Every structure is written in C-alpha cells, then in structure tokens.
Length: 249
Length: 323
Ligand SMILES: Nc1ncnc2c1ncn2[C@@H]1O[C@H](COP(=O)(O)OP(=O)(O)O)[C@@H](O)[C@H]1O
Ligand SMILES: [Mg+2]
Image (cartoon, rainbow over all chains, first blue to last red; front, side, top):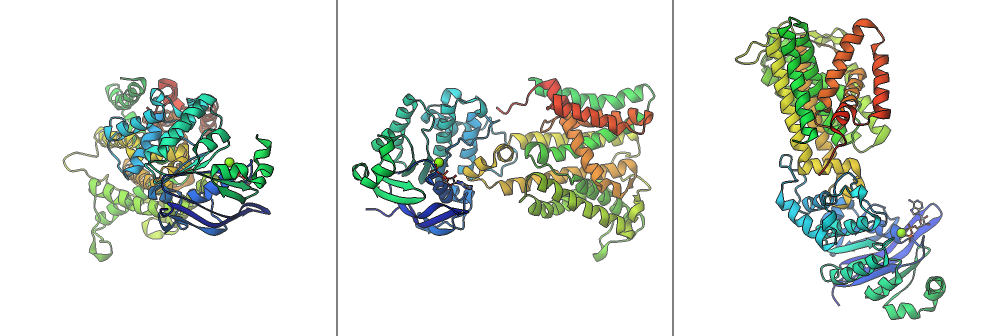
C-alpha cells in the first residue's frame, strides 16, 4: 500500500484533568475515506483541531506528505494542502457565498497581497469560485450574504470553500450535521467521488453515511482509540458495540 | 449609480461647496474651517482602513497624525534655520518632500507598533496602541530641541511648486485633492484581494486562517498603510495651523478620530467625510456657545451608537453591501 498522506503518532492533549486526546495514532492513505466515530465528547473535534493547527497537542507528531508539520500554524498547514471544514459553520457572514469561496481561491493562488484590482469583476476569481459553488450545489445562492444562508446551505458553503483550496487531504468535521436526509444522501454521493481527488478524514455521526463511505473506521471513546478497521470489522467488534454502536442500533 | 455611490458623491461635493459658498458670501473664515474638515477627514480615512475594514480599534492613531505634523514642523524648522540634520541632510519647505518623509516615518513606527500590538485583540489592542501613542506624546513633551511642551511654529506655510499655499482656498484645494486621493485609495483597497482578506479578518479570523491566509500579516500591512495616510493628514494639519504641538499626539486626538468615524459610518467610504463635516461644525458652532460642547457631542455619539449604527452614511445610504 502507498505511503500515508497524513500520519498521527501518539497524540495527546489534556484540558486540565480531562484527557481529550489520549495517545492516538492513525493515518490516512491516498484515495481513502477514513471515518472517525465516537460518542459526543470523545475528542474527535479536538483531534481535528490539532491536525489543523488550531490546538497545540501536549505530545505526539503529525506528518503530512512526509513532513513533520508540528511547527506550522493554521494558515501554513492549509497552504501545504490540508483543507478542513468546521463542525459549526465558520464563514465570513457579511460576504456573499461567492465571496467566501473567492477568498479561498485567492488564497490558493497566493494573491492576497494585491491591493488594487477589484475582485468582483475579476474572472480569475469569480469563475473558479462559481465552479466550486456549482459542485457543492449552491450556485443559485451565490449572491446571498453567507449569514442569511440556511443551515444546510452553510454546510455546503463550507464544502465549497474546502474544494476551492484544492487540498491534498480533507478534514471534514461532521459535514452532514443538521442536514435533512435528502441533503445527507446527496453529500454521501458527493464525498464518494471526492475521495479520488484527495483522501478524507471524516468525522461523522450519521452511521448510514459512515458505513456507506468509509474504507476504514476508527473509534474514539474518552480520547482513546478503542478500535480501528474495516466497516465489517468495526460492526463486529464487541467493544465498539458496547461503547458506542449499542445505543445507536 | 447606487445609493452608496450617490451619497459619497454628495458628501464629497458638499465639502467642496462649503468654501465656495463661504467665499461667495464673504465668510472667508469658513474656508479655513473647510480645510480643517478635509484634513480631519483624510486622517480618518486612514484610520478607517485599520478600524473600519480591519476591525482594528487603534486608540493610538494620534501618534501617526503627530508624526506627520512634526515631520512638517521639524523639516521646515531646519530649512528656516539653515541647520542641516546629522549627515548634512538639509531641511525642506517643499510639501511633497515633507509628505513623503511624514508617511515614511509613520510607516516605520507603525510597523513597529503593529508588530507588537496586532498579536493582541480587543481591549488589549486598544490599550497597547494607546500606550505607544502616549509614550511618543511624552517623548515630544520632554524633548526640548523642537519646542517641547510649547510646540514648534512654522513661521511661513510650506510651499508647493507652482501654487501659492498662503492663499486659503488654494491650500484648501491641496487638502481636498489629497482627501480625494485618500478616498480613492480606500475604495480600491476595500474592493481588492487584500481588502477581501482584511475584511474577512474582521468578520471571522478563524475562517481567514482556514483558507490559508495568516491574519497577522494582512492586519499589519493594513495598519501601516492606515498610519501613512493619517500621517499625511498630520503634515497638512501642521501647515494649516502653522504650528505643531504635542497635543496632536495626545489621546484626545486619537479619540476624536474614532468619534469622527463612528459619527460618519464605520467602514464606509464617505464616513470620514460626513464625520468630519459634522464634527467640525459641531465644534465651531456649539463650541462658540458653550464650553461643554463635547458633552453634547457625546450625547449625539451615544444616539448614533444606540440608534443609527451606520452613522450618517448609514442613514443616507442604508446598510453596507459587500457583493
Ligand atoms: N477548549 C476546551 N477547553 C476545555 N475542554 C474542552 C475544550 N474543547 C473541548 N473540550 C472537552 O474535550 C472533550 C472532547 O470534546 P470534542 O473534541 O469537542 O468532542 P467531540 O467532537 O468528539 O464531540 C469534551 O469533554 C469537551 O468538553
Ligand atoms: Mg465534535
């Protein structure tokens, strides 16, 4: 099997006495969707934050594309190719959906220090941004201020922004959270194809989506990885059933 | 033309109309008042880049205003006294050179202050910028070579090649044209890629970082540009009064610039113009009636903050739109 794109080794992070991440190791290989599941408060979001650089781990190393990225900040990791979405939508509320995506496009082009040319008439920004909105199913809402988008559309906007970054790996934190069943199904089909562009570390509560999509599943409980394997292995795992799946199915 | 553009054009023309009407009716004093409006507006256009677009509530922009003023005063003083600076550099009475020096000096100081203060946010940022400005203020007071507490007179207004700057309306036009240039800069910056990143830093810095742009660099660049524009206004202000004093550097001045922006409309293109017109008229008329005019200004400000968030421009043009 190919070299992993992303590899975590022995990550730990405590908030006071609470061990939110407790010796977690995992990797993400080219072309795969690796799902990270676990009950609320298990430390999934905290782990994503540490990979993205918005929380410093207490211990552990992160390799991305063969390089230790521990010293890089959030923006630096994004520029290397780590594209993330937030569990709670994080957008520029006054800007339209289109301008939110245009911001990602200009960053991807490395052109944020251009001081003179108006962006709204700049096709090298507008066209790629529109294309990403179309892929995310949000083209008709392009000119709506992001604050006025529906919850589901904000989730789609998060995806469109991540797409525009053309990342080498996606970190998606509960992209389906709060979406209607129709939206979840659409997004499941979308992610299924997206893995060919870049592998996905997918945190998700929607078990239908996880079991439909994941090449591998890792289960986090109280900050510890209690199991990791294929979908059928995880379904069969007694520990997982007791700790997590039991109350779902 | 949309309402915002129309409002901006009307305000800018109004400012030009004030000295014209004043001269037509023999109220020549108002020409000087209009120059004061244009200069304060330009200073606030500078601050509006940091505060309005970037959300950086600098309570220390008097530092840059004063640095601009002292650049004009000190360069003129050396020229008049025929005393070269160290290394034999001469003083100058030439406005364009003075402006350049004012902007460069403020830019360098802003890069330093910004590099330290922009790592903080909220109240800390306000306090650190205030502290730096007060440090420069006390430095000016205690530095006797250039007048110390008494300030420094410019016995004859500095010169611009080909025009008579002693004529009040000519001087107004110089200030007014520089204000237009400042407004044009603001307009282009706001709509540029840099402006998009800067406004995103204000709206949601987590989002900006998550698309791969470090908010720090964007804010620092904005702070420096902002300071340079305010310093240019400071140089003009010294020439308007033919005098520069430490009071240009004091926190009152920083506060006035913020008040002016809030009155006019934070982040709006013509906000500083509206704010400066209202502020200077208030100061002139009410200040003639009562010592406590600032109390009434305070009440107006409170009204704006509570009931008219967008200031004068917000009232005239409605909510800002970002496309
Ligand atoms: N900044 C923080 N400070 C203190 N505790 C935190 C912080 N962030 C998360 N936690 C705690 O860490 C645990 C893991 O949270 P989180 O990573 O959000 O879980 P998940 O995403 O799996 O639901 C929770 O108990 C949460 O309350
Ligand atoms: Mg979470």
